[in-house]
Image 1 (cartoon, rainbow, N blue to C red):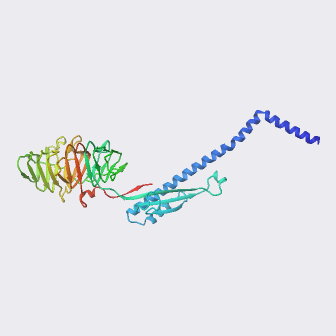
Image 2 (cartoon, rainbow, N blue to C red):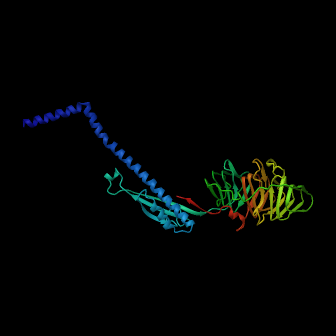
Length: 419
């Protein structure tokens, strides 16, 4: 019995010594803190592994969805193409939960232009597997679209600043798209209705844009559809300046300038008109008519002077009816300003409510502007210019019928990752 008491007494004395020893207390605290430290480190490793797996899985799903949309565009078997792309992705082993077109779930359910790919992976995590009987499942989905773009009838080529402007109280109503390769100012106080407003940068949208007008920010740049198809003229002889003071018919050729006096009529016979530094001026209440014509604004000096390229000037009360030729080197183009023209001037396109511009206006190095009280109900107007502006009280209504040249201004199927 004495031995047991002695052992108990010795144990109590040892515990008392440990309690009073600071080094012993530190050992206990360190041992106790190891549990949360190890747990936190384990969870951090698991979280990093989870994020890495999810990122890789999303990359595979995105690649599969885009491949499926491209297959749809090319008329190929969507399921076969997506399966092949996913099979070639050997970074991780995963389960293909779904390859769908149209999607059966999500915000794009029922949309025949969409391809939905759902992938999952279930693998044990280094730390959590010590406590979980089954590994967690990571599931991701991606949706890509093979959709028809709205054909653009207005393309501003400038790649910096604001390429396309609709401001003041301008009203624009078009059944086509307006695109800027930089930014887009759409802050008019009147109305904007179009197939789409698109910008490589951003569309500064005011409250005048109708609900049925799509707005696209951050779009790919639009290539110049007329680049390489239109050549600048090299003229050697040219007629002098023509001033129209009575009803007159002119024929194709080169003119240093043409001025149509107020309330007079000028009829242009079909063909190409090269107009020099004096340009073409149509005064108030005058009538300019030309069917199957192209006006090429250039310089008629020898040698060529880029600082004296002619331009178009029209009064808002003038009536202007121009249509482009269907054949020849300027097919589809009603106005072309020499691309050697330095930036800094504006070609103002104006006319009364009876004015019609049927074809393309091409001024790749300068500005095409609508301003003042001009108003037009155009049949099929396209503009490709460095800058395009609609300001003042101008009103432009564009109703391009099916089959006209506007369809060639990039209405192709495009591939977009939507989710």
